[in-house]
Length: 282
Length: 252
Image (cartoon, rainbow over all chains, first blue to last red; front, side, top):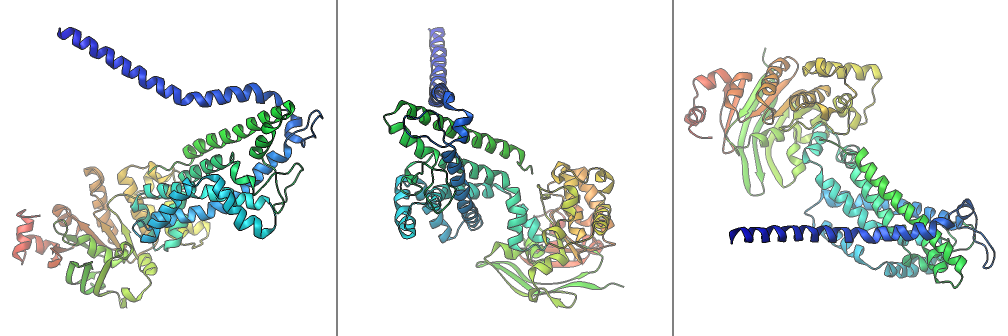
């Protein structure tokens, strides 16, 4: 009687374990499927031609997406240049003034901003940047992406700095180091790895964004690195090519997806490595 | 022979509506070790932090009265200058984790953007580490991170960092409370050696430590200065009944 009860419990225990293992694997499954299809369909379209040439008109063989790859990289750099200084500074403010009312509002708005649908951000940038500037441009696309990066950078900077011990700041202040130098020379370098991780993850997050670029960066079939002109980028090309009726364009879309995933993957790996390399021990 | 470095006059400190220190007046003798002792919450650390104006970085603190370093009123001086003249070492060793041992010692100069010749820097580092009795242990690993050292070594590194600025006064805020007995006795020996270079004020909750290392002792109780005098006298014939009770372990 008692023996039976125990055996039943052991079986229940095993079942439960299998259950959680199964669902954990289920979580990882989509990524593996994505990789599988991308490698299967995308890898064959990757060639030097694909990476270095411009798209050809429909019907012609070959051609590449050099303009889109360069455009994506340019957009990422521009968006980072805009959002990193603003985001890190705001993160410092939030972590240094935890109790202030302004800080709590800023924190709340950053959280809400993170939840704003990306297409809405695209429309907002269209109205406030594209229309006044009189046309689609790379810089407006970068602004839209920067707005999307901001909340991630703000929160990760704040959380990183919150983890630093107060004694670190005291040590610096007690040496007669002014507050601003304490922040720049002691607090920021110590929190560098955490801030870097946040920045790289925010870049990984926006590098595949399509919606906010539809009415800002717009896309461009030609080679362009002029930030005041429309610019091409991988997500936009994927969107365009995948919707087209031509099989060779579908192939291009697979290739572009593959390149994009590789970029995102590399960023994630770098952020992990960077976090490890610059991790500070107390 | 004796001369006064620091003169505290009618110092009172309030945290919001709470009075933490009540009309403290003290004069600190040059090149001596003055211990501040008392039960928890009596205002020892508050008093120490007022002296290099570190209490100001927490905000919500109000003080009345004056503190004079020689003839100049500390409240009239820029707190940044005050802190360069009056060094501080904290309870928990806090070397800068991103910096090497060498840079930690030079941190006061580096972080303040004061440029020195390489030879001067080397001299300051060696001199400070020697004074802090750490030189022999770290002279071959100056370019390693300071956080690789043991707790006691880290604390001596922090003392070297404070000494490198050539301060008039060194404030030690329970410098041994996070250390094991062996490291504690190293630091205590060090404190006694250091008084030939610098005036030392030591906050301690350890009565025995105060009697071992200090020349003068301040006894604080509930924000009041109960008794102040030469350590030997205060420990053998305390004038105030509360001092006697504290020393014999009746409270605290």
